Amino acid sequence: MVVAEPLVACGNHHGEGVFWNAADGRVWWTDIEGRRLWWYEPEARRSGSLVTPDRVCCFAPRAAGGFIVAFAREVAFYDPTANRFETIHHFEPENSGTRLNDGRADRQGRLVAGGMNEATGAADSSVIRVAADGSVTTLIEGVACANSICFSPDGGIMYFADTPDRRLRAYAYGVGDEPLGAPRLLADFAAEPGAPDGSCVDAEGGVWTAEWEGARPVRTAPDGHFDRVVELPVGKPTCCAFGGPALDTLFITTSRFGSSPARLRAEPHAGDLFAVRPGIAGLRDTPFAG
Image 1 (cartoon, rainbow, N blue to C red):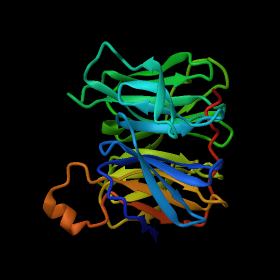
Image 2: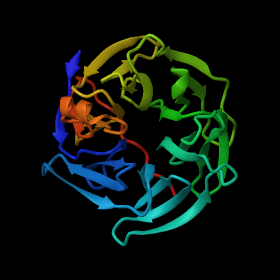
Image 3: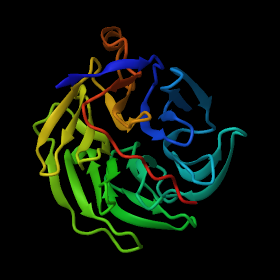
Image 4: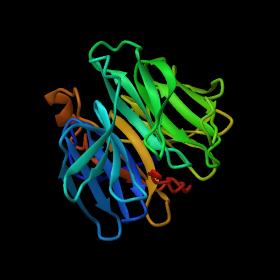
């Protein structure tokens, strides 16, 4: 067990979607409810943020420059320098209660993002995949709150959790347009203090998962048992990612969303970005290929 320390005093309303962008040497993440994209440069030890035109729920760097972003209700190419975006897909336009939530680029450079019903909590959203040419495939249906989307080192497994179900599942994942394989249970979070939120994969194939209301990320070994824990002084970690030049630092986003004034006084670092070196390295994410 190791303890993560606060790194950036950003006080996010709902920090999420953290990743390392090797192209600019920055850790990037989103404050969904604050409608800002944040960045931190480990080499210069400086940070900043950009105002966004809508809630960014998850995003990834593009090989062509800028980002592909999953706004609440649409997927778009986004040029942060000009604050200009180009919509390429409207998410579930027939269901006004759902929005996009968690997602990452796969090892082939396609964005996989899943939704949630923030109006009713119903299991009526989905997980989609956006290819480099902008075509969209639905991978999973009947989703209440998509989280933990990440990929094995060889790209052959997709990990996913529907948060209320409290189970982390593994799907056989192809390099082409083939459907997902049948899911298998990787880890059960029923006895854990928190529910599975955002995840990432390390160089040895372990899955690190932030536990919402659990005050910790945990590592699930490839054989399915929990073998490492990172403690936090705040209760709502949301996502984690390896970054830094050596990919040996685990960065963890946190949230203030729904916390009472009394709780925020007790957790003054809620919403900040945390970091720890857990003794294992991560993998570089593949940029979106389009």
